[in-house]
Image 1: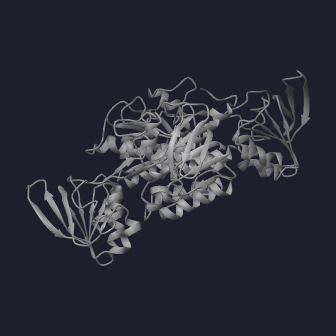
Image 2: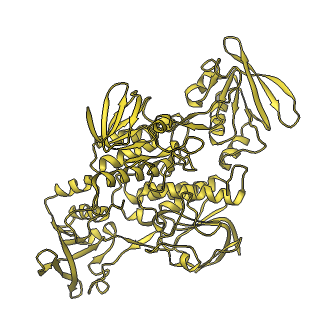
Image 3: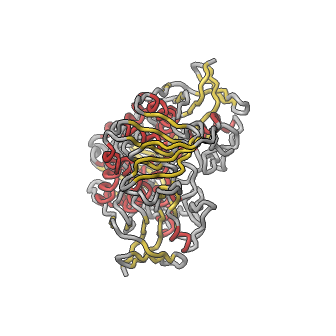
Length: 311
Length: 311
């Protein structure tokens, strides 16, 4: 069994920041990700709010952090899926689909996944016109009619990105106001090929081989109608990737987010959590960075017990 | 009296990150600083641990964040000193040496100042061989003999920086181990002109017009001796710039750091704190960024009360 000082589960923003601080603190650090490193950050077409960069693509920012980790000796294992965790003992056990590891501390930075809206056709047409990632699939809809579902930052960023490609973009939002930065709202208002459908729920996604229409319901008038649509981007929030942590007795809140204190500690000694998987109310690149750093320094303190460490 | 949505006190990392998020959220945002914008970040010769940059000087990173703020309409007033705060009412009152302002919310990001060691000669020779900032004053000591006092990250970063300029560098540390990243300790060990004086207290700084010697005390042997030294860099930690906040009834801990919850809220409604002035255990650029962002988004929620805001 391979031994590490610190295992970080998840190579998104929080995990990469934790990796940088783990390695710089002299900890033998392994970062695992079941997908490619970069996390949901890498899905962002454009990041305009990470201090240090006025504009950068998510993938470019991710690559910078990955290169930073590698330059200081962090091991990053991509496409390696964690199967189970045993966190109670002094040595933490991490079993993946490729190996079994033990470590002195674990940071859970496994992020979140896109929430589904749960309507007929959504699962059936996933990858056939239904997508959860604008930058991944946007280019498939050049000169087509696209519907974005949601009203938060990620819905607006997706709509803005796709408006450059598609012939027309509609945004269906359940409410009568967005939950997004005003800068994004203003940018959206300036787009001529974007229309907002307020108070609107999508009730069904229809098609043959590919999506060709959606059924929308107007919450004010109570009326339903069909809209001809080629692509649907669902951006209605996230749910935490905390199932394995929960099975290993890490405490989560009612929505499944891992409970942390101000030092990123969970209820289990030597187990920390950072980023979108936690109950912290803000989910931004800059806040995930701060949490990953704090978690790594706390893990260092927990492992090395320097004179200034307070339990 | 000028009215703002949000006033941020301090234009260091946390204040600038708060500025970016305040303005992007559509808040009319003013950032005040009694010195130049950039805070203590700007004093760092080299930053190697802010995710996104493998190596960048503190001043360059500060300039990027300042430019980001300005590009989106944040007002930054430099060299404007806050004289008093009145934070209890719905409108927060901020009086400076140049004007009087009111705002709907305030973020205190006033940072910290360098702690003194409190020995004879320290005040007398400040600016005459005694310094608290390597990057500011290091170049004055080319080919000279320099003593750095302290054992944390900032002491080691200062020593590493000055070792490139000075002929010899000694580090006096009260303890027998550093409280610094291992990457820094290793870098220091590789320097041929650096010597560490373990278990050593500086008891007095002497000179004529300029510093020419220091009295050091060996805590193990109990012996004192004089060392010929041209420059002393004191790097023994920080103390919070929280006096005005405290006078305005913002709650602080026993060391004077502003008490915050996980949402960066203080004990006063509409008053938030972020960065080195807070009781958060980690004081890093990346953590200050996260806190500034959280404070600004919480201030936005407090002011605008969008449907998703929870008290």
